[in-house]
Image 1: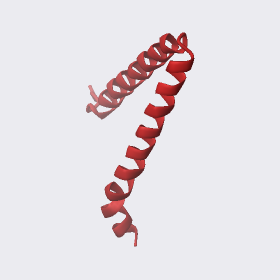
Image 2: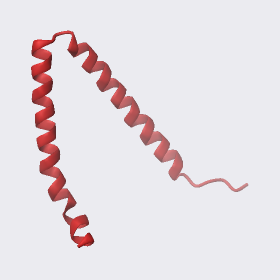
Image 3: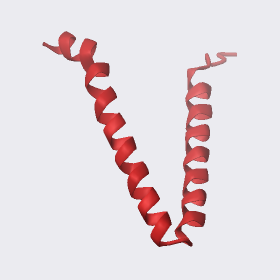
Length: 70
């Protein structure tokens, strides 16, 4: 059963994440349309999220490097 779930996880997650992305986009469009100053804050939040992802990727890369035992 566990192997079945692992093999088919992408088939389950793809439509769920697509629905979440569409819902988030529509809510964002509604918020920006009705609250114009929110657009600036959303750009800042998106920039912060990009920085977090970049820093996380750098740290994971550094953790995957072999350690020097010298």
